[in-house]
Amino acid sequence: MIIRATVMTALLGAVLAGPALAQSGGDISGVWQTQAGDANVRVSKCGTQLCGIIVSLRDKIDPRTGQPPIDDKNPDPKLATRSMIGVHLFFGMKPTSASAWSGQIYNADDGRYYVSNVSLAGPDTLKVEGCVGAICGSENWSRVGR
Image (cartoon, rainbow, N blue to C red):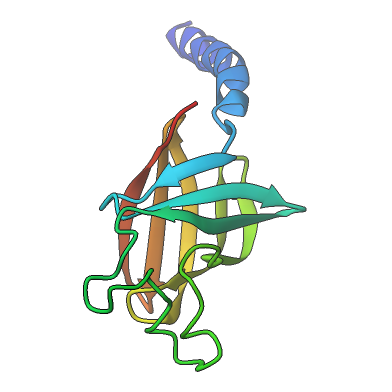
């Protein structure tokens, strides 16, 4: 009898949690501020993939050059002179669940691409992870406005 009650309680919990888990996918679309607060990124669904584009920077002028920041760490000379505004950060980001995507992320700090996982950690928190081999680092981005 105790086992049957435990199984029934677990099943009832799963049924009640189902709608909540389905809703936890949430809406990822919007503008997100990086953990350091140095950039705002517009995240949206692009077909079945996820896009992320820099839409604003905290520092409007690069103190080293006196000019707006450019993608000067990019190894491609054609891209190294482009404005940081409009730079795409996510590539091949495909869904792995209702609220998670995997693909690559561009790191403008070193001009390299890394394996990446992006997931909603809450309605206003986006967890962004980058990996080199088995070593990964992550940060939480905050939703800007609502």
